[in-house]
Each structure stands twice: as C-alpha cells, then as structure tokens.
Length: 89
Image (cartoon, rainbow, N blue to C red; front, side):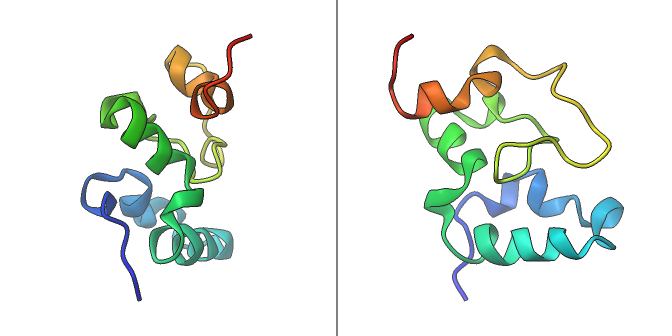
C-alpha cells in the first residue's frame, strides 16, 4: 500500500476522530491517501502553492468536510480548478 508523501502534514489524513464513523471517509482515505495522490486536490494545491493554501477542512475531491463551509478558504482554494489547470479567465 502506497502512502501519500504529504500524509504526515495533511489535515484530512488526520481528521479521523471526528469523521471516522462515515464510511465515505474510509473510501476517500483508501482512494487518495493510500492510492493515487495525483487525483487529490489537496495534494495538487500543496504541490503548486504550498501547504498553507490548503484549507484544513477540504476533502481530497475539493469539497468541504461534512458540516463545514468554504467561507474561510483562500482565493486559491476557492478557485482551485482554474489554478490547477493553469487557465486564466
């Protein structure tokens, strides 16, 4: 099993205590943290902009964790598809 190189500092990888009961969280960890990190939005943002731009409540698919919001996210995190694809609009 491959572990993501950013796992140690990843807030999502360590949010289990609160969200462990959700079976979807286990699936996300299996797919992104132990699988293909190149599909993880958190990983991509950290690689391109540094860990500080990755919201602690962002899931690997770019959505906020259940029960949380995007209201405190940086401009980079809010517009991640544009920045990750190097598109200007």
